[in-house]
Image 1 (cartoon, rainbow, N blue to C red):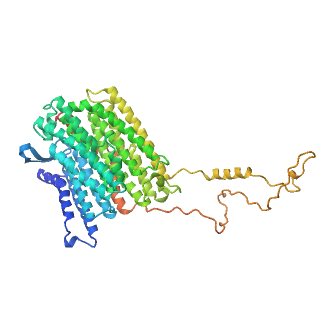
Image 2 (image 1 turned 90 degrees about the horizontal axis):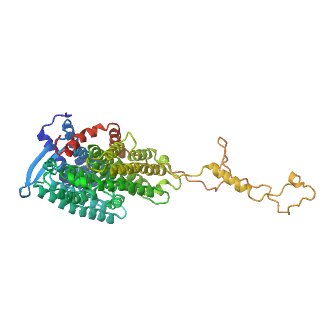
Image 3 (image 1 turned 30 degrees about the horizontal axis):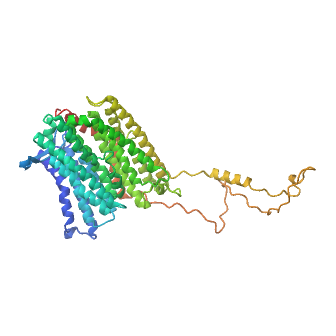
Amino acid sequence: MTVIDISPSVMQFLLAFIVVGPLLGAVAALLPAPPGLKGRNPDQAVLRHGVTVTGAVLIAAIVLAAGFDHDHPATMQATTDISWIPALDVRIHLGIDGISLPLLLLTALLTFLCAVYSYFKPSAGPSPKAFVALVLVLESGTLATFAVLDLLLFFLAFEMVLIPMYFLINRWGGDQRQAAAWKFILYTLLGSVVMLLGLLLVGLKSGTFDMVALATDNGRGLTTSVQVTAVLAIGLGLAVKTPMWPLHSWLPDAHTAAPTVGSVLLAGVLLKMGTYGFVRILLPVAPDGMRTFAPYLAAFAVVGIVYGSLACLALARTGARGDLKRLIAYSSVGHMGFVLLGIATMTPTGVNGALFANIAHGLITGLLFFLVGAVKDRYGTADLDTLAGATGAALYGRAPRLGALLAFAAVASLGLPGLAGFWGEMLTLFGAYSPAEGLSRPAFRTFMAIGAFGTLLTAAYMLLVVRRVCMGEHTLPARTTQNASAASASSAPSAPPAPNSPQATAPPGTPQTPATTPAPATTPAPATTPTPGTLQAPPAPGTPQAPPTPQLADIQPYEAVAWTPLVALTVLAGLWPAVLLGLTDPAVQKLLSGGKS
């Protein structure tokens, strides 16, 4: 079933345009604008160019999805297969199925929303020309990663995104941006070198680099030792990009230093490239090798879940001076741990959960980084202690719509039922309860229990962030202050009684208190909290008054345009998960069964 009838040749053109279009747009962004398109401001003209190109790519992706045959999502569609390097049997092989189509749409959507956001709120830094060109190159590389079906082309597309992201962090980032950019590029390049060796090993030993042929063969042309070596080498490179604990340390620094748009694309799109490689390459091509390493992959995954949550709790506590962007980055380590756990189960349930969690994480964490960027723009900092407000100024009181949206994204991230984050985590834990044949059930059920404990930790730190940032710090009620004032007044030395008072007349023999200086006739009463409903006298001249809480700009129209699709899709995926699972499940079933539908 298709939404609209599109001929195969048009489908091929659409997929080719989606992959190559942003690259051509990047070249055009660096050229002088035609006279009729310069407008009044050259910077705004090039930013408008970015919106136009990413919008055209998004429209093409939506049309491609409408022409996709949803009755056969396990079949590669819109395929192009052209010989490129005959000596190495490298081909320009493109195609999409139910696994890659959602990631393609997610990438096109997030990049377009980033372009719209940047048009109204440009990142501070050098020329917008270079910024737009780098974002478009990044989009092209990411889309190509999800569309190519040749191992060497996959590697080229996988590496294509590194340089643009490096420059986005290094030139448009915040504090410590140079160190963070270098850490990002060195970690990922080191993992990529090892991954290339594994890809070459698979291609040379099997005689082909075609991913469809390799998946159909299902590892039968590779010995167990070759599969184990390939999984170790390729998996290491993919784990760095995912990122898997303990190869994650580049991620918090990169997110903290990156501009808002860079953080959205890094969390929403780039992290998905690593987990996609596990599903597209390692599971079908080297199943015996994956079965050998699956328990270790699951163990690292659940350690990452708990570690990421504990790191977030440490950053969220009062006085820790934690950075909110850094906290969301550490939360990504935990969420991607659920994705890796689902992949390690090697079951349709677990892998479907991993793919669902991939999309949910892209939507929710992309929204979170948009919101954190907006909060940082308003406050001038992402420091949690400052955002919590030493003066009691919290988001609910200063920008209520922004605070409500931040709370929504937080509860979606913790996996609230009815929102997108719930289904991926639940299916992943179900898959761990009953892993694939040959894997230890007691071990994976232990991993499931640890992962379930991680969901509680996730809820703890997300709710703590909402309480501090949206509601402000806890303060003592006024009644406590009143009682304290009264207690201190009663403990002070009392004035001597008046001459005719009951205390002045004492029985004979009673020792008399030594005479003291009489208190003034008009002793001021201790300050008390005024009774509600009574008229209060105006303050005396010169009395210091607490300054009114300054209001912040609430959600702006351009922010609503950029964020509304993410909110809507988070709710839609949570209420109607069959939309996504109907695409992925048949493709996963075929992938795990060796190419048999």
